[in-house]
Amino acid sequence: MAMVELEKRVVLDQFFEEIFYFKEEGLPFFKSLVGGEWVELNGGELTVSSPLTGDAIAKVSKASQEDARMAAANAKKGFESIKETSIEERLGIMGRAAEFLAQRRDDFVGVLMAESGKSLKEAEGEVRNTIERLKLCASEINEMGGKFIQGVSSKPIYGKFAMVIREPLGVVLAVTPFNYPLFISANKVIPALLAGNAVVAKPSSGTPLSLLLFARIMEKAGLPRGALNVIVGEGSEVGDALVSSDDIDMISFTGSSKTGMRIVEMAGIKKLQLELGGKTPAIVLEDADLEMAAEKCVEGALKNSGQRCDAISRILVQESVAEAFLKKVVREVGWMSEGGGIGPLVNEEAVEKVKRLVKDAVVKNAEVVIAGACEGLMCSPTVLDKVPLTADIAWEETFGPVLTIIRFKDFDEAIRIANSSSYGLDASVFTSSLDKAWKAAKELENGAVTINDYPSHGIGIFPYGGIKDSGMGREGLGYTLREMSREKTIVFNFTKTDGRGEKWT
Ligand code: NAP
Image (tube, rainbow, N blue to C red; front, side, top):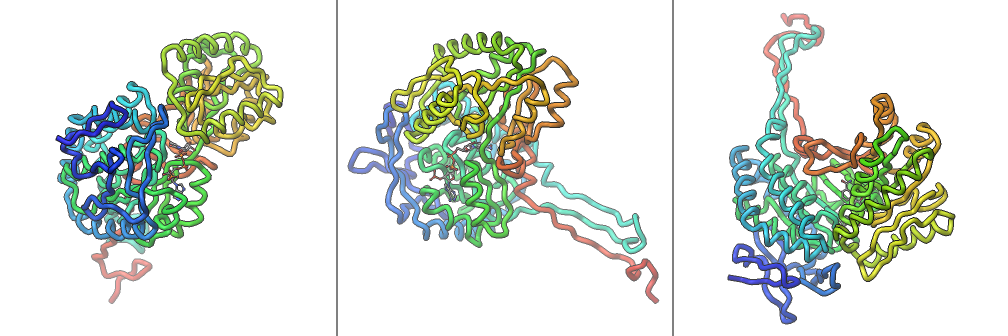
């Protein structure tokens, strides 16, 4: 049995043997999956480090630009095989993958904790969601069904009928971020394959291991050769080569708005699904259940140390209840910190960004209610009150454990502030008034509005996605499947009529 010790917590079994070997330094070296083979690529190697200790935990074969183009070309060949599989076969693969993943749950939990510094609870949740996602394929497959339209509405189409069928697109490029490295990647790979596409997947170079393990699961579950290709490489090096490749038919990207914009520039005419950044406002109105609002706002802001696109990143609280709300927030933050729910940030750059945003807000007269401190990548929560709208933290994505409280006088002002953001992913409203909830739902410029809870994309039973700089397209059960397939109209004419419906003689 091949044993790999990553941070002394992960032991990978023989199932994964083919995908890595040990290098001289004693670190496991992971290969990439291209054209149905686990191979070493030509771009050298990347070191994966634990955010908890800073220690190297693995090395990964790195793709060159030529490798990236080759992976896309191999996927094109893989498409020829997967598009011929029946839906029953694809569902069979997903079912077996769910079983294999459940059997190797501990390997995945360990790898997630090691590469992204997640707590045991968070890592277990991510693996559980991925298993659940695989199991739910059967419930969404009807979305691949077609439609029949009878030509009876006007003379020119009398006697004709059309079938609208749904087809796969070809090759889907899935590019994913560091914060949910297993689930977000799987949540693109699964529907892409289910729809009959081939895939090239590129994980974040900081957290590539869980996707490589997932690729092994999918391969063993019976995917046709070349249907799933996974390469690792820095986005700044291989990104353009992948995105601009003529072998790619669709790009499904989750990451920052800055990278999303680069993808838009480079892609040419390709279908795009972009899940980008956010600056989620939570509006707490004076008629809200403040106990619940404080609990939800704190959890919504601090889960995964605030490193979530849907994290509550601005709390807009009505002046008349601000003091009472703040007291409850402080108590909740204390409980959450004691409970050990706050893990490390992903890297030094993320820590520096949090420090910069907090410093800027304080210089501009925000009040520090709880002063967080950072030791290495571990940052304790900061609570800022009376944050002025001139502060950068009122507009920039924080991606760290900071509660940014902005006070407002009336509801219209809150909606104006919320909508002034360039982002439009999620928003929350806390109120006991149905009228106000409805007004907020209608007027807020976001892809989703959550009433009396924090936003949570979860496994996508409720669809999600952004507007404005937060992206385009929707992810979710059935929704992603539709995005990753296209409709084709086939018209049959069984009558001998001209364009005005007159009979030919
Ligand atoms: P990121 O820096 O934009 O990176 C995301 C992915 O894009 C990584 O795999 C990265 O590779 C790759 N990449 C970088 N430059 C590229 C290029 N020119 N062409 C193609 N790919 C390129 O984002 P992140 O820091 O990993 O993730 C955090 C961001 O993701 C936040 O803004 C967050 O809001 C967003 N997010 C959004 C959602 C949503 O559902 N809307 C969900 C989760 C996260 P490297 O790692 O090698 O640079």
